[in-house]
Length: 227
Length: 255
Image 1: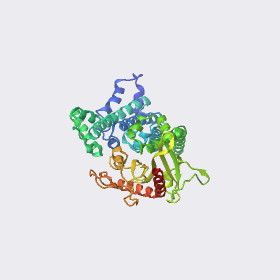
Image 2 (image 1 turned 45 degrees about the horizontal axis):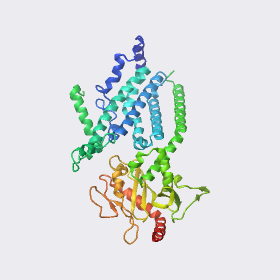
Image 3 (image 1 turned 135 degrees about the horizontal axis):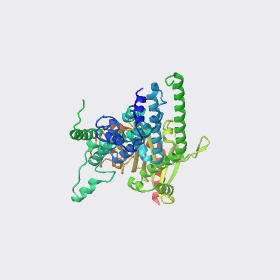
Image 4 (image 1 turned 60 degrees about the horizontal axis):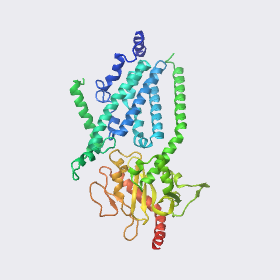
């Protein structure tokens, strides 16, 4: 039982600072060095699907943060009672419940977003990042650490999809958060001038290209090589 | 102990019950809010056929409800264009007619709501008639509201929505730019036969001279075909009502 041994190691330490170096690493690692999307290449499906505009992307990011953090917390609290043989199903049930909750809340309070996102919010269930964190971390660590870990991974996911959405909306629709940047810029150059938007960016292909560029830039900087 | 079958079963049962209670509880608490949101969304879509999306976006939910109440009247008609006030002993109101459910019935049995856009507070000064439409896209259902001007021929506007069309392709039917292509198109030809309006294959051509064709969406021909079939289908079903208004309006215009 690897879960139990990992826990014992942790228990020997005296009370750890609320944000000790190790815990800070739990949050900061997934942002760049161990990013779920660009390094682990997980959660690509939704990264492609929801990123045509900033606003739905932001809602998606917040939903994912909520789901991962809560799922990590729940599984971590239950980690000593969950029977090993059915743990995947238990994880799935918890994640599915949380996702349904998010969907219901969106439907009640942000119906427009619900209409746009409900398919993808539902797909958070199959987002490999969520299950990956539960299986790799929450099952073997204490609740507080698990929350931090989930938060870090979710932020790592969020900033990448927001970055992708930024370029896709700007280049594809000429806007940011629905504010028509291109129109303002074009206005500066006189009436006949109109910046052209790139239709490719609106299609999923655009997301692949942007994502590829981000991964390229990141790996050039960090020197990360896949083995 | 933890690995015994009895433990696993007990654990699973407890987990299922807890999660089930949590979900049904949430659904109970949020249910009324969700219904409100749905009703508001429907009103937005109906209004979207006659006023611009920007105007609607600028309104608060209260303002939309108020605007709707003061500008929209509604009736329900049957396939023959005759008004229906009750069905199976229950009163029917246009807002409560479930178009999706009616779609599954035979065309003759369906209820056909008509939303009437009129001058503020004066429901005899009609500005346009709004008809709900429903059909199948590529992946799932598509629906919308089509507004006809009082000549019962010119399309004043349309709102389209979908359940699961491909984002960036078929899902573009929700874009104001695509919907604007329908404005000013005509559903009857010169001899008074219903021809509807058809979205064409391919995109970027100019159909401004043809009153029955609109520019298509690149890569979404099947969704476009679905939209065309939907409009033809429902305009056909509303035809008796449209014809009746046409003749009565001709009389009204004469005075």
